[in-house]
Image (tube, rainbow, N blue to C red; front, side):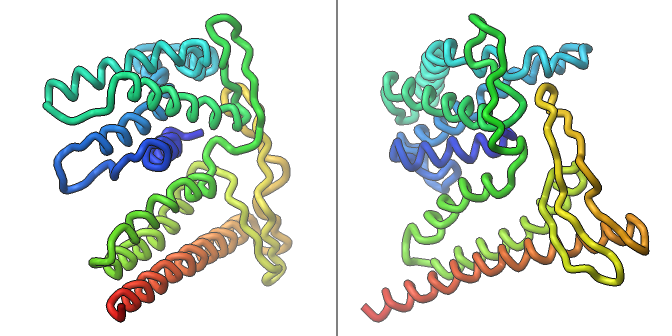
Length: 278
């Protein structure tokens, strides 16, 4: 799973399970915000092993080293204790309120565990028993970059931000709608640029048929091979078919995102009006 999704999952865990607050707020640092930051940092910490690639010229290092010791259930308690100790030292130096050392250890452990479980759900394989064993178990349930899954983790946090207080609810809902609409276009463009398997479907038009992208992961290294073509074209060639598929994907994504955000706006206005009536 990509690191951004891990961070979103960690923030959600911090807020839902440890009484965390928003990561960024125009308020002094509080115990609740430290808890959310700890959960988020714990959730992205295992991917710190990619930093070794910066100092290595071995192109195969990502296959032999990535998702090994830092993704290990065996080493997880040690990393949680070390990160908790570092956090306590930083918060004392900056005179911030922070959870206890034991609570921080638990938060970091849960954050790291969430990362390990999400990576297990992909096809790359995760060495969860390293350094005792170097096998790569993989459940192969999710693609490494899954925008739908990322949105499911981000959605509750956006809704909580929109509805956390009645004042300016309509403005927050409108901002959310605008950002979601723009994000849909941007994410679709990025996904198609990197070859992520976004499903697109379209009716035959002028002899052109758009097919769902069929991608099979080869496991180690995250190398993919595509079964069939992304676009089957009967008359006008691949470029025309890809362009129609791109437009269908962007349009459907924008419509879906705008519809969901419109519901948020409508509910926000309704709740705000009801509050005024009361």
